[in-house]
Amino acid sequence: MKFAEFDQMMRVYEESLDQYILPDMYMVARLDGRSFTRLTKRVCRFEAPFDIAFRDLMINTVRALMNTGFRIIYGYTESDEISLLFHPTDNTFSRKVRKINTTLAGEASAIFSLALGQAATFDCRVIPLPNADRVADYFLWRQEDAHRNSLNAHCYWALRQDGMSARAATSALEGMNVQGKNELLFNRGINYNDLPNWQKRGVGIRPAAVQREGFDPLRQEKVIAVRRELTTEEELPLGNEYRQFILKLLNDADDACDSKAAI
Ligand SMILES: Nc1nc2c(ncn2[C@@H]2O[C@H](COP(=O)(O)OP(=O)(O)OP(=O)(O)O)[C@@H](O)[C@H]2O)c(=O)[nH]1
Ligand SMILES: [Mg+2]
Image 1: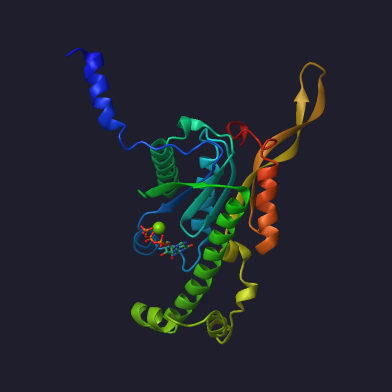
Image 2: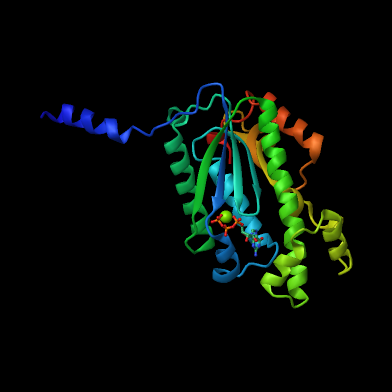
């Protein structure tokens, strides 16, 4: 058999599970740290429930992922997860699911591990969404998840500090409603509303136009240049305001930076 025929015969098997995100579908990729409960508590011992150093490692990873050649117009991180919103016309790897997932998971794992100085891995799933409203719903959903996680985590660690075992703290919180959890914290001197917003709402990263002073060597004078840079937002809006924030991002997507040029 000639190699060309052999090659064609084998490629049929290799490509049998390949899928593509259809044109006109919006794409979000979500990455999640693997076994980060163990990593954050046993291997590296980050402060619980929230550690600024861990948050900054996640933000650093999002910013780096936004510069890996995909056109990503918004990055969001909460806990050990990252969501990336692609420019609607992004056609990297012809939108092949396997390439997007493996490349982003590999990049995130490498970036995070190098910054941490310890091996850590992420999985990735790319999610097709049919319209802008569902994209906004997606980010509202992850923000709601951040909110629930942070309330739970604060309660859990408050109970652990009272001397409860992991099992007893978990079962004490099962079935407790939001008001009960708020009261549990309040009785221990913590007003949940006063906790930092990045813990309750997550953190957003997006390209924005910023003015930078430069020097024109021909005219030998200072010039103001508008550059696209990534900005990090620790004070994200909530609810309908957040929906409008996401819809505006999509609306402005054509002006959004080519992520390859952003720093
Ligand atoms: N100590 C500490 N832990 C954190 C912080 N942020 C996230 N985590 C932990 O990261 C873990 C993320 O949860 P999951 O993704 O559900 O759990 P996982 O162990 O990564 O499990 P898989 O994702 O299924 O592999 C939780 O245990 C969080 O408490 C932090 O700032 N400090
Ligand atoms: Mg995880």
